[in-house]
Length: 195
Image (cartoon, rainbow, N blue to C red; front, side):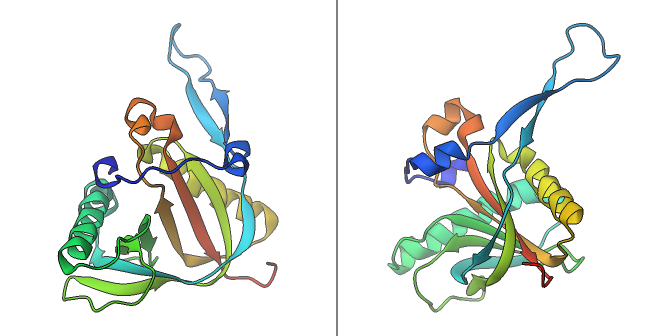
């Protein structure tokens, strides 16, 4: 996915303070020298999310195909904006509609509505109360952030709606050497009055 991100951003002091901590997860009875996997501790918070306009490709994608579909769709959205002479889009997004059919919208944040085509459309991320966490690390471990949010909400009596989304940080060249710095914000729309 990183090849599609070319804008560099730096972490604010607040973001640095919110880095997840790592704890060692050991396997009991494993052979000597077994590599220990580190699990993330996430700071999960409930907050209000404003609607965010997006440029997306809508599709139905099997979970095992997401790792190929997401970067390809993000690249196509950026190419569309360049060729149409539109303002450069923002961070990349993946919006999971939770319909049980694998429906997803993948693309990028945009500042204003635009006329799309049959493939790339104007959409928006929903407004409302969300449970969110920041994931620092490889995309292959994003499932840990999703699991942490779901478990945290269940423990506190928050009902989740069927939708969630990820917003990917602008790719930084340093992430090629240190993927533990890759930032992804994960959101779940809440469907309860507790918020």
